[in-house]
Image 1 (cartoon, one colour):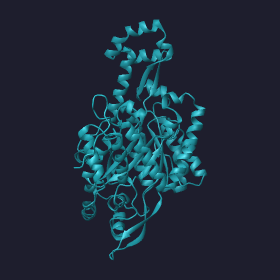
Image 2 (cartoon, rainbow, N blue to C red):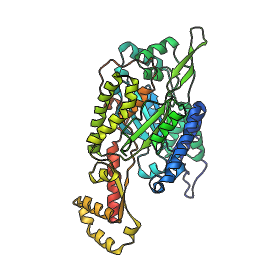
Image 3 (cartoon, rainbow, N blue to C red):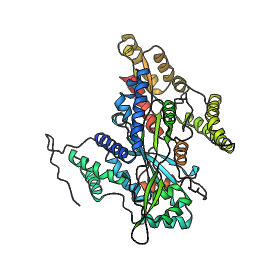
Image 4 (cartoon, rainbow, N blue to C red):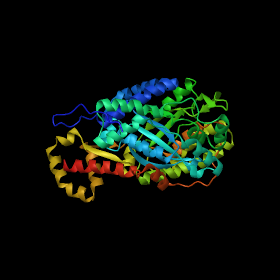
Length: 486
């Protein structure tokens, strides 16, 4: 295996490595630049997002303390890719680890008739998220859910595919063996890794085979027909998704019918919208060694607004109401597209007003439904009497007795403040809704019985996925201990 010579060393003679967050940051920017060239409408979308974020932050000047400045918020991205083989997923985990990104959460999309299951590769430490929170929602084709003939055809198409360059494989191995990459190696790694995510117009299969996959399901066609897992969306973060959704429609951009996620006014979890997937020119190999012109619909422009992460009880309320909303949505669709589009948002809002137990951040905190981190205010840090009383409260905080009451008293007196923990992950129903809204109109549906199979996914991944509740819980607990012990 070719090894790159390490030239830069520090005073102790050890190599100087590019920080993983810096590689992640540079890769995210490079990916965004590439996607802008491939999907010009994405560049227009970024301009709209930045304008709305600037307007919103001007109206809410205190947000910078919580979210960072305009550049930090407007550069935030998450991508999405779809892989075909277990070995592709295992290598992708190694590739993302070079950038300090790890698999968090398991998402079963078969419940929405989509033959994939997924995880999100992202930073897991609070400090790393603050530096750059780039995430990639990564799905793996579930051939176990396909009919026998389609499964065999898909596996045959994918059998000889290698989505990684030989050099990126070498650089991943170098990073693992020496504990990181030098700046020169990191620059080379970014260039080589981008090749995996690039759009390739030429398909691997004939148009007839593509149509067969499409009749099964659009995701099967997208995954099994092409040379690589082209990035199918690259999502910026917006601070007012309702304003953005309306502006896109006013500009004549074809959007999905409704914003996915909780209704407007509930600052929980995640809301998403997108412009519809583009119909792109594709070439299919023919029997004479040439190509025939075709079309493919897969890549779209998604935008998200992130809110507070919910604790298990809060998530349970959300999941229950979402399930009710999905059943009511089916009935509305039966009454016609116009009825559905005009009545669904009001129905969802009414449902949450009646049954979701909290609406404001304060209510979510006081009812123990959301995750928060706590810190002293300037008033708290400069109050000698408070410092003495806080020291007396250490035992209560350590033992977990009465600390909620203590925290609320301090917040009420302005001695401490609570900041919502941003939900850094995804919602299966919303992800499925976005995917399904952008499927080719010829796409078929799964016919086999659906079943979650996290064990199968983790076998392919080569490791366990992290539980995001444990990550959020640790973040909250650490802040409380710091508050009482600092």
